Length: 231
Image (cartoon, rainbow, N blue to C red):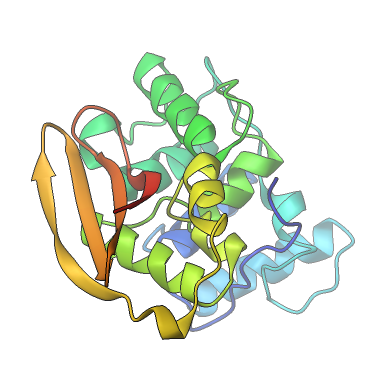
């Protein structure tokens, strides 16, 4: 389901994906501060890692370096690779996991939720596809309106892959069953929250589009799970 492309990181990059890369480098033996900033020391660690694994030494963590850098983790695993996965989940749903380096029941549960929501096999194993989804920004929206806006914009652009980053495959299929037309004149009507869910709506003459999703209350992550066109 996931594309083979990985987000490129290089000196000057910053954020959660850099933090993940740093945790993974440390697990591979680098001596490095995990601070989410890709500075000269991280660049040196990346180049040393690339050289030791027969990769092109360019300091860029991209399509050739990510697959070698990631470490598969699952229930019972421990260490900095586990912290990398936990930190990714924490950045999306902080109340659902503790970044402690131990892959216990709460981490297993959160990973399975994530995998199910993005259309992966919910096996609790953070392998290549799950790592790719985590570092590629799937389910990273911090609000219901943010997720809904991203999905609506993806629909308007005919970009199914972008929509899948903030919605379940089922919701994307429901939405893309209809082709967006500028002449339809959709206008945003607002969002509301009730009982662990949110509803965001767009109106056009005689019709309403409703994007309904999970708001990280009853289950982790904020995402669209249903799309409906209503009279």
